[in-house]
Image (cartoon, rainbow, N blue to C red; front, side, top):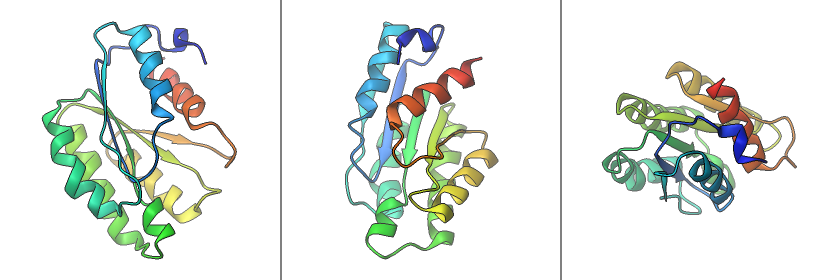
Length: 157
């Protein structure tokens, strides 16, 4: 994916919150840095955290970094650990996304139905409710970085 897709991007501070390996976001950061020389990225994501743990450990530090763009991925570890509670995950996503949006950040989430249809649906619902960007993929084999770059480029149009 070419950084030219993000030409004109105004984002200068990306914060990544999540419950899994988010190393693919390095490609997002590189593309945004090419589009915006003052760009900085902060990856707060940690593997194997429940959605509530993501909120408890990452939301306040994320807000303190004053992002204008945030990527939020939560709920998959709840599923992996056999502790998926849709109402609780919906609530945790709502708190995180609404707080970041209220602080002025654009928020991007991932909804991958092949990984877990219910999590994808509730993530998309909450993201839409708070005016975020939901990156949906129909293929579990999709490259998350490429999908996110396409979603951000579409948002900029």
